[in-house]
Image 1 (tube, one colour):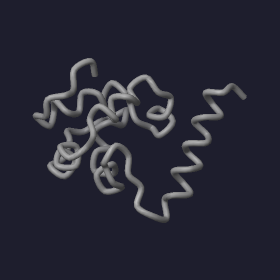
Image 2 (cartoon, rainbow, N blue to C red; image 1 turned 120 degrees about the horizontal axis):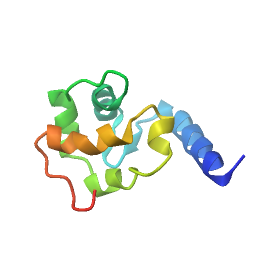
Image 3 (cartoon, one colour; image 1 turned 90 degrees about the vertical axis):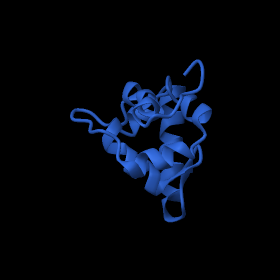
Image 4 (cartoon, helix red, strand yellow; image 1 turned 180 degrees about the vertical axis):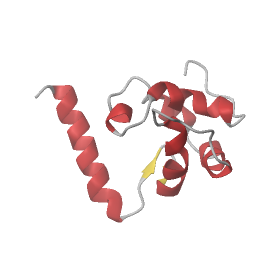
Length: 98
């Protein structure tokens, strides 16, 4: 198994272990992540909900952008292109170079 796959597996295990407590990713908690997932999941993504946009408005967008070329998003069932387009759909200005 390559180093990239091992890293993804490690991250997934950590996320599963921490699931019993509040998980946050770039200042988005479980509820915010869950609210946004339908908008960033293929094959039938939906428009982001107000709850998703509220959670995204409080998120660390540069941190989220750091995942755009990562294998973590696809491993979690998230389409990176849809995820990177989410701020614009929520009328939030994305960081430069994102």
